Length: 566
Image (cartoon, rainbow, N blue to C red; front, side, top):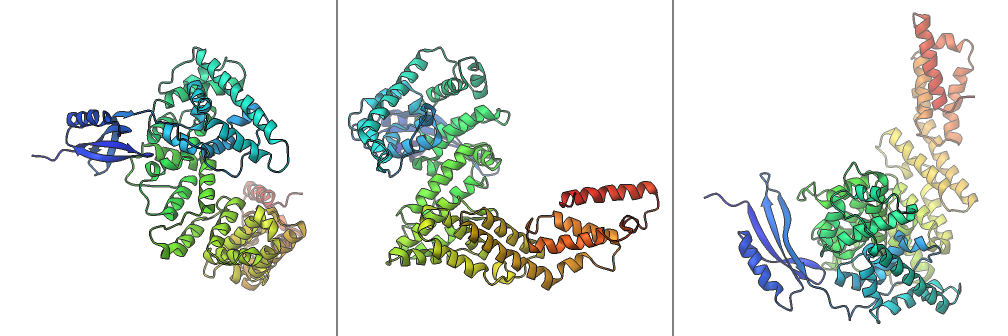
């Protein structure tokens, strides 16, 4: 008798996630057990999941039944937060930065209610529930008002009154939307947005579109179900504007810690989770055990294509906050904490620089410093040294230091940062900056990227120029020592080949646009251009006038690309 390719899981909702309670061979016994379990007062939720084994051995899952009881909210409390952006305009309260703050502040409530900030702000019934929670609602408003006036900018009581009024206005807007005859959401969110085009201003259209979406999402009683619903609406033909609205809703979900296991699977420690989240934020996350049509592969692909900006921003924020937290990177094996730190630090290194920029550089430094006994400036400098040692190459250490200089911490330790930068590039030797054995083009590109990063950094102007000059000098020495320009301008080759090589080299971006190194290459080109009878010598060997004119036109285009026009 052939083995069945399907099985049925009966799952229970525990705390903030689903766990397998029992496995059944057929659907009816699974549903019968689910019905008995949900009658138990101690059971919060139950669902039946059908597993189907494909021919390649992979599994696909589908939820056949799900029931989640309303959570008791009396014990819900705010979560202590230490920052809250000030919203100046009404629409600011609906923006991603505001929603991320609300997501952290009401984390316990949202975990109990299985709710996101987008759903709360666009659903009158959910707003009313929060307003009726006497312990939660005023505490949340008071905390935000206190944070927003902590620097002396305004009176906290006045700000609290403003927030209460604003939230009342948001409730009135949601109640008014609930009374309207809005379209129902089927499988095409773009169609809903299009139907609402005549409903007032663009802000009103967006708001009502999210009212429709939220009314649909509140019926999904698990984080994964919500994410799958939103991702399912993200088809490739969807225009950018409705996709942007879905992007915001998905960002709320991705910012929810409880969904991490559903997104990534069970991870051994925080370090591995952070590395996977970075992969996802860069659109390069892969998992062979996940159905390619599931939510995460689609979101990963769209992030990689640059189409889910809010999702990426939410991921960067999660990663930064986790780095800053006191939670161990390897809770179960404390002896491996340093190794885990090194793994995370090295994963933060990307071809374009340090992932997340200044905020990540600061978070990484704070985490290393938390493990030191020494405090103050000495401890901070040792933390910087520890981060430098954890990074694999000088170019990444360089960008880390530049990013750190652009953070709040950087302003306090700028002299130490400049000292470390001097040590990295002050010798003006490419072998100390870019590893030996790499192709010359790659090594020059590395230094040119560092030169550009220095000029774009938040260092004082004089330091920018000085550090950039040190890198440019290292490039000059490398060009001269290796005879790179001479090799391109090989006297044994025809002038046309030599000139083409030199101009293409100048146009390739392997050297800074301005500086002594690029001047060396450009001057060699100009020597040829200024030579007598250049056109005739350049086209020597081409038999026809038409061929000669074609070659000169192509060379002229190369000159323009290389910046020699005019």
